[in-house]
Structure formats: C-alpha cells, structure tokens
Length: 99
Image (cartoon, rainbow, N blue to C red):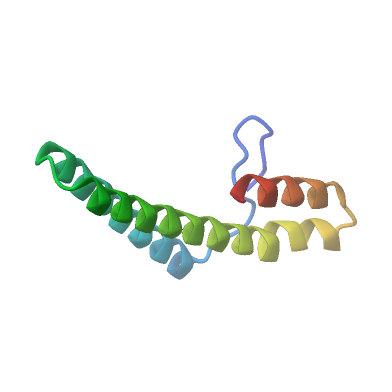
C-alpha cells in the first residue's frame, strides 16, 4: 500500500493478532470509562473514581507503548533499512508525547 502524507496509512501487511489484542484492550478501557461515568452519575466516592481513573491512565500508557513498540519494529526498522533516518526524530517525538 502506498503512503499518502495526508492520510499516513501503514505500508505493508499488519499483524492481525497484535491489532486484535490492541483493539480488545481499547474496548476494555472504553468499558472502564463507561464504568466511571456510571460511578459519577451514582455520586460514588471520589477516591474510588480517582483509583479507576488511575487504572485507565496506566492501561492507556500500556497500549501506547505497545503501539510504539510495534511502530519501531516495523515502520522505523523499515525506514532505517532503506537509509531513511528522519524517522528516528519522529520516533523520539512520539516517545516524548507518551511520557
């Protein structure tokens, strides 16, 4: 698949198993968010809500790092093999945004 700068689709085949795993994790996070929404509607104890928010933050971080790992082992590795080192700067910027 060709890459269009405005769309930025991934080149080459994706790992369906990894993609499904990430989608499942995101679905669980959405479920947690819905649970927090219910907690707020029910006027639950603030400390309990904050604990659940913290769990979601950690889950999002984990998904983000998994996607970054995948990006580095596929897209970045491909670019480096082709001699394109500008992707290193992009990867560093992505790591900064995750932190």
